[in-house]
Image (cartoon, rainbow, N blue to C red; front, side, top):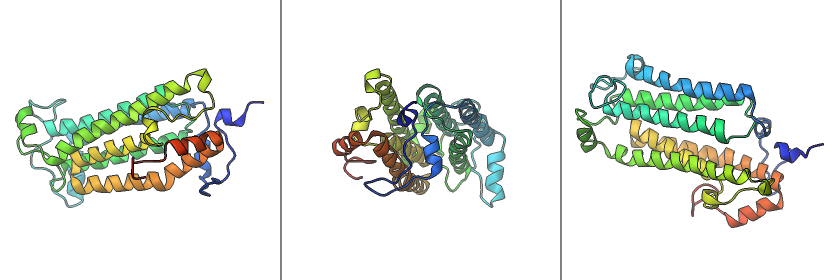
Length: 282
């Protein structure tokens, strides 16, 4: 009979250190061996997000949504500019690029790195959660109150010269966050692929800086995405929401899971990598 821990199934007990008890769905999502239904649904929904975001930008649907809530869409059309791509202005080409980068990263993760079961319902929930956040950002980028669209978009040089500070800060934050989330998972997958590391927790590479650096990367790029689309206020709301959710729910869940899966080995990781989310802070 196989060891339950090798299949990702561990005793569903509260953490001995914190007393935290993850919900039942969390334990189901940690089982090893991806399911065909979950994989197909996740990949399909993340891929379909791209034509949906493009349709919001180009069809007038996004602007109509803004108007239906009593708002005023941006005066400059998101469509038609020789300086943009896909028939979009430079700014809204950037907005479309943010959605594309997030989808490609997550599809790559699911097909090439992730080895968890992720049941169909869980896969749909995660995919739709990301589509909802992307849709909010797209609509904010079309609303005159929140859009960070530069005043001049006749050329790329004019676009960057008139770019708001939120774009100058948000673009590198998005790029760094997406890279961190992708690269730390590549590092962990390479470690796990070696037979001699079977049953061992990984605390090297970027995971040697904070124990949940993938969550840190996700928070960074999501915050950068929101800054670019809607400015400082929405960017701050997004950062606080994600950090709060990770610190109050996701990180305690994973800490309990790793404690029960790895035992004393996880105590060593806790000692060697004391910070859970932000170096020097938490």
